[in-house]
Each structure stands twice: as C-alpha cells, then as structure tokens.
Length: 410
Ligand code: NAD
Image (cartoon, rainbow, N blue to C red):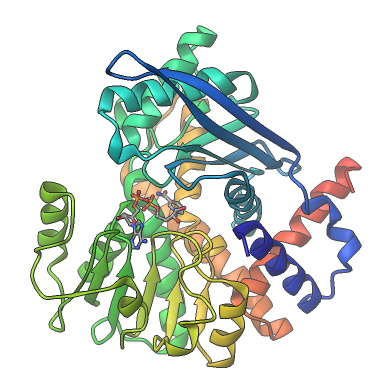
C-alpha cells in the first residue's frame, strides 16, 4: 500500500473510533491543489537535465498551506499527497493557524554537486513561484534539504518578486531571518512530548534505553537531546548501517564521525541492520528516517514500551493495530514531530513582524505548544479509550470540520 492509502486508512479508523460520520470528512480525502512540474536544469557538464517536482496544497481552511520540500529519488505524487495530508492534520493537532502542504523533487542529491543542487533548488521555485508566498503556501526543509537549500529558494523567490519576503520560506539560515532554535526544533518538540509521556508511563530517563533510526536533522538532534537528559542511547542508524553499543553511544562523537565521514560506518560498536535496530530491547524506539519502517512483519517483534515517531508515516496501519494489541504506547508523527512546524510558525511570525526573539523565548513557546498538544490528545485518549494516533486525528478532524463549516466549505 502506498503512503496515501495508509493515511486515508488512519483517517477512517480514527473517524470510526471518534464517532465521526464518514461523509463529514469527504473534504479531507482529496487535496485542494496539486502542482506537478517538469523543469530544466543545466548540469555542470553543460547538458540539460529535466527534473520532476511536486507541490501539493492539501487543505487551507485553517490557514495558508505549510510543509517541507523533500529531495529524494523515490519522491512521487502519492508520497507528497500523504505528507501534505499529514501536515494538515499536524497543524490542526497543535493548533497553529496553517493548512497543510508538501513538496518534493525526484532527485538523488548524493549524485549532484552543490552547484547543481543550487540550480535544482532555484529551478523548482521558478516553476512554482506564482503559487507560494507568505499568505499562500510556505515551504520548509525536509529529507535531504537543509538551510542552504532554503536560502537558495528564498533568494530565487525574492529575485522574481522583487520584494523581501522572508516569511515565504522557513528553516532558513539565521542570517536570512531564520529562527533561533529551528535547526533542532523537530527533535526538541519530540523530546518535550516524550517528557510528558514518560511521566505517565513511569519511564525514568536515567534508567531508560533508546534506539534511534535515522541520524539526520530529526534523529541526530533527538539522540543528542535525550543523551543530555540522561537517557542511554544504545543504537543509532543511517542509510548505510546501524550501530549498537550496550554501554551507550557517545552522540557527540557519532555526530562528528558522521559529519566527517558521511556515514556511521566505522564508529565502533556492533554494526546492525535497520531491521535489527527496530526490534532491539530498548525502552524507547524513535523512528526518524522514512515512511513504512514498522510494518506487519516486524511490529510483533518490537519490544519498546514507547515509540515516538519523529519520521512522517513510519508505521503502517496493520502495524498500528499490532502495537496497540501488545500494549505499546505510540506517540504519532502528527504530534511527536510537530516541533519543526511549530518553530517554522514562530519563524514566520517573526518574519512578518520584523522582530526577532531570543532562543529561550522560542524554546519556552515550543514547550508550551507541544505540551498543550500532548495534553489535548491525551485527554481524548482517556475520554474515548482510543490510541494516541486516533485521538490526534479526531482532535484535528474536529478543528478542520469547524473551520470548513465556518467557511461554507463543508
Ligand atoms: P535528513 O535528511 O536530515 O536525515 C534523514 C536520515 O535518515 C539520514 O541520516 C539518512 O541516512 C537516514 N536514512 C535514510 N534512509 C534510511 C533507511 N532506509 N534506514 C535508516 N536510515 C535512513 O532528514 P530529516 O529532516 O531528519 O527527516 C527525517 C524524517 O523526519 C522524515 O520522515 C521527515 O519527514 C521527518 N521530519 C523532519 C522534520 C524536520 O524539521 N527536519 C520535521 C518533521 C518531520
């Protein structure tokens, strides 16, 4: 099943659990606008290559579309559709005034020079610029796109429009109006949510072990924050290998190794597969790589007490059912990784005001948003006796239904 079918199954399951009649949600089953582009980029050897790019503005009843842009060889329409739907749900769950969007370019960034990546980034904005902007649709980074990519994209947008409009793109470098704290905000938000969940589940940070799949922006920062909080991170992985160290991994050393060598290989400790990482004996499992990692095949072997989904869509609906049956608490992506978009929202607010906050102010506000999100979802878990994913979807669906009804869009 593709990710979008999974997303729709999640919506139907939650609607059923929350007693929402299916016809009330028909406005959420199709994106509002789908943009598909095919654009030329000059390669370093002088030849022209065409790239396929997508941007989906899934829903905007609660505010402008908002969501990242991914560079990955496997990007396709179904994936972008699922990711833009999840953004719609996520922004409603944490109560920030955005709809949902997402974009992607089908490219393997590892096969291109920086100069080519710059032209690919600029070319994508040239192709979609009329449809984005601070009041329309606000892109941000995602898998294999970073601050620098955002800087090129913003620069291209401003060159085309002839205006300084930093609120068009978030996740920018601080020098172009980025927010303090944005670089590690997804992980920080996940950590704040885990703090609440750990209290309820009687997990003691000083005794608990953690396994993190994916060692990029989300996963690396999460491993770093949790190890600073006293958790023992016993396993990490990237696309090349997994590393297991029973005594706990030195995350600063691992981050340096990854930065210098581009891989976790050779870090020391036992090399394991991603599959082995997921089913390790660890109290907390953090998927922070890509979709569809926890499936009906491996869900039954997962031994964690809690799963905190920093990646989008790492768990399939069949796996959800197995995990729930086995009493594993799963904090879903649409809540757990919302810290990134929360600080993107703060970045946009600062850009629109032209007034910038200190890091501590950003962190305080982030903690407030994430804790409130967790408490709102947890209250529904208790009231309706549903899973955290179902509760998050019910909360979001109610908010989206209210906004759509007020606009006469439902
Ligand atoms: P990233 O590009 O910084 O890192 C991705 C990491 O995953 C890399 O370490 C890569 O080696 C690893 N990886 C790739 N394929 C893998 C595989 N098959 N097995 C194990 N590891 C693999 O990306 P990111 O921004 O950290 O995003 C990771 C996930 O978090 C994605 O699902 C993304 O949508 C989600 N997310 C990111 C943000 C954000 O602000 N960056 C916000 C919300 C959600």
